[in-house]
Length: 262
Length: 252
Image (cartoon, rainbow over all chains, first blue to last red; front, side, top):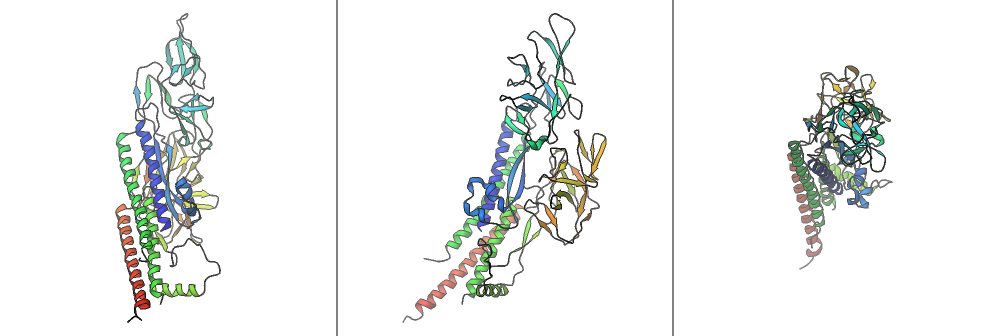
């Protein structure tokens, strides 16, 4: 009886977390380069109920130990599916047609990874993402550079005023991980790599399983409205169902309390 | 004299246990590959009551877990092995087994089985299950180089044009129970030897959902609560009867 109350509560917390993930996905349905959070439910043993419930679990639950698995938790990982590419015609918009991430230097100087390829030249004259984080490839673009071309292999060429032939300014490299689903979102559609993601492998676009670059395109978000709505409905109903379990356990308690009359 | 109260107490304990099982199923209604638990109670309450009286007279040396709410012997749990439906996720490393079979996972305490096919590549590129342990193929672990992974219906794993391994599915003899570990992996009981599955198909981009049916669990829960209520009414009636016998019988 005691157990059922808290098992039901883990189910409610898990569905609440799922709802949070759906809200985040829907809010980012038009965010360039956004990767959907995928929620997976996992069975946890009753010893882990205090962890699953967090501050909701009273001390007494920590001592309840039964052998069978009990309760569930929701875990969010990153979708590994790319969103569709959209033509923008903008010269510095670049999409990755396949696997891989751009490596940028985040605001605190540590590497971060992104697929949002709406590039610009930042105040230091370096090629950077929309929020000003420079690419790790450190490509300096002179202010008077014209007709900038980014090749499928990442080579960036431009015509400078005093010459007619294009010059090579640098090469955009891509990074991939053995386990990209473990990347952690840190805002600005940037991700950082925890140790579970594995060692970053840097290579030129189009090699080692990495995608090619496509200039003039952007990768849209991979969130699909219908899918999110269906998941939303399920999460809501799942929450409701688990709350019924808590109610039933409560009813049992109330009956026990009514065993002695007056 | 206390036999009736013991009996009714035992019934209420069994109901509380039934609700715990239903709670567990409902909490895992969306857990990938979860198989519904069924409580098996073939109880003869007269023996339960006698056993309980025995234990009251001769309490065991160690008093066991204080949290155990039940006077009954622990409920036997069986696993409903009917498969769940397959859900399309389009993720390249999600694999579902169609047919009778389990994936084999290599853990520090031996080979374990699971139906959960939400795999990922770990930090060194080895195909791993949700617990982080390596998934065993026909020729051991499967290392995935970077590239597009394709898994055929027979389990052959290809990256680009190179074959890097083949997934393995095993089955256990019908009727043998698998023990569930705390992390949800299934352990084969000692003496059992799983055999290679025949006639299973692997489906890339699919996951098996749980086989919990909300309606069924809801009905079970309603029934349990009402049954508990009936037991409580009996207990109160018995209490009233004792009250009459003790307080009213001698009065003129």
